[in-house]
Image 1 (cartoon, helix red, strand yellow):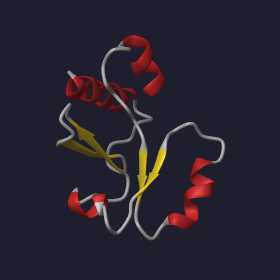
Image 2 (cartoon, rainbow, N blue to C red):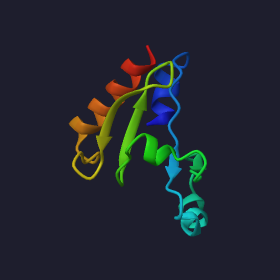
Image 3 (spheres, rainbow, N blue to C red):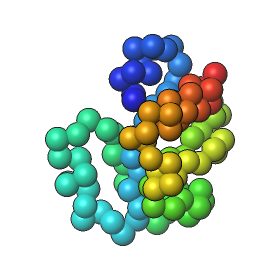
Image 4 (cartoon, rainbow, N blue to C red):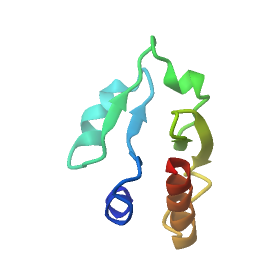
Length: 97
């Protein structure tokens, strides 16, 4: 999706990345192997998962001022369904405008 957005709307500030939960660092190598998605590690000091009340498989969409705008959970919102994929893409583009 990042590549599609970059191609269609190169000037919009949309950046997709993963943020691993504190205490789950042992899986970072496997998560990053063979992938291009930027992957960040939360820390106890930053506590992003806690401050954003993240649940497993949440997509947290920020606005242009880095405030949480919307949360979509991929467990309940299957991106293999074209309509869900298109909706998430639209949400990301709208948040960047």
